[in-house]
Every structure is written in structure tokens, then in C-alpha cells.
Length: 220
Image (cartoon, rainbow, N blue to C red):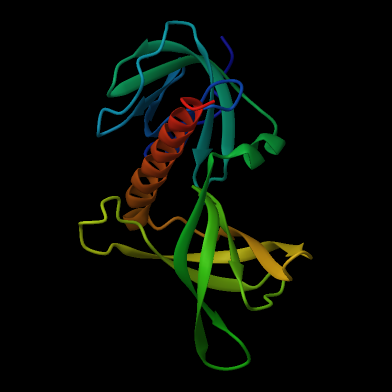
């Protein structure tokens, strides 16, 4: 039997469970890693029950230990827990395929520009567990460190749930049609207090997106 490509130090890491064609199955956390399987749980029992032997891709997010992308086969599956066996690791290029949700979300960026901090209203265009893309009426340089403040509440009737994510700008996208600048960012660390909120928020946004596609298809 081949050695497990990750160790139990990845326990409690946030992970994305995907089909082999990159369709999102669920978001969960690593519960335990043994020599035979990876066990994943979801505290809200939102895992889909899968067939024995079904092949999956798992994106594992852990800033301290690094991103890992593994594939494996379903061993046991319930709405609360999933065990994956026959696990092997994929190349680092697969890290770029992290579950990313399109949106148009008002947010605020905090940055320094030769002196005190400034705040600027921005629009987040997409977000994942590892970063986000936003547009702004300001020219940031590649490599700049900023903080993005965003409301992660999943119910409009509930109180605001502001979370701040330190980010590094790694990509600048110019839109010549409307002279607009967009910026791709990676999170510089994963605040434990915000990770659950971010998972719930992204999962809700993905469900809204899938429901909207279903409704659109009704009229095709």
C-alpha cells in the first residue's frame, strides 16, 4: 500500500470536494488522516451522499503547511462524513483550480500610500477559499499588501458580519473598453475565526448561482 501523501497535521484544514471534472460537491474540513484514508466532515450535514468507489478531487487549504490537491475514491459516505481511500497527490498546477464563485459584492479595501492608511470602496468580482478578484478606481501595484473588509453574512435579515482578509495583489487585469482595473489577490493567511464564515458564505453563493442557472434553463 502506498504511503498517504499528507499527514494528520492537515486535520481541521478547510477543503473543497470536487468531481474529476471540477464540479463542486461540497465544502468540509479534514477530520483525520490515517494510513488508509482521509476522513472529511461537515458540521451542517451538507455533504452529498456519494457512491462507493466514486473518484474525487480534494483541494486542501492550509496556509502554514501549503495547499494540497489530492484524488481518491469514496470509501464511506454520509451527509455528515466522507472517507476517501486510494489517495494520491496531484501537481501544483491543480492549485489554481480552487472553487471560485462569481459575484458582484460591495466591499472596502484598506491600503497605505506613502503615509497613513486609506479606505476605498471596491467591488468583489469573484472569491474563493484562497483569494479574490476586485475592481477599483485606484491603481495598485503588483505585490502590494492590502486588507479587504467584506460582509460575510448569509442572511440579509441578520446583523452585519464584517471580516477582514489581508491580501497580496498578484495580478493586474486591464479592461481597455471602460478603462477599468481589476486586481487578483491571494490571502496572506487564513484567520481561523473567519474560515467557517467564509466557507458558509461561498457555499451559499454557489447554491444561489446553481439555482439561478436552473431557473434560466427552464426558459431555454
